[in-house]
Image 1: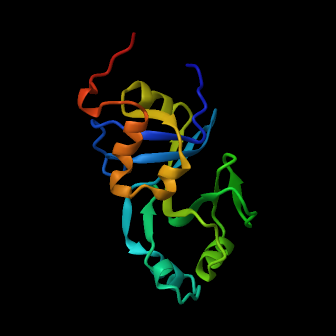
Image 2: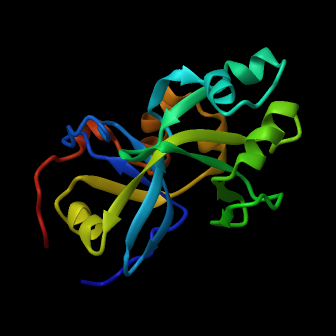
Image 3: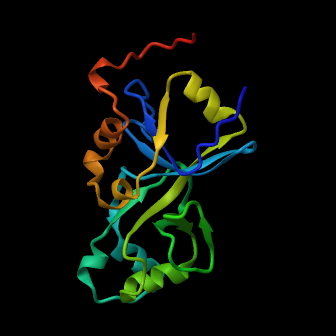
Length: 186
């Protein structure tokens, strides 16, 4: 099976994918190589806000807008860990640069900076991530569970989560109403 590197791409759940973790999801792929893939779901909000995370971590802030920020369900793996997608413009303690535009950070220092207003201008905070073993994602794509296409930082940071799936599908030039749910290989 030929390996296509989907790092820094969107993975969009097909309408037939009914797994509650991924139904109508858009996942930003942070890493994809011969060992597997890792991504952050960017459009599944949780019922907690950033203020609750700050309280749990003893991070003070007086900014109510920051406290009210939505936290996302990044995927079913390590849901007790935070992952911050943000612009590639600072060097935090535990950052991985994914592209010229996007990095992912897992360290407390970025949250402390967000709390004081010194964090990245654009960020998305998620608990957990999506992970695939070697060859698993490729097989799921062949099984018609996912579409993939180029990512767009505007969509990650500016598109309302409830419009994200339709927006990404539209940017791919796909009419979802005409999409076949059948599996087929030429």
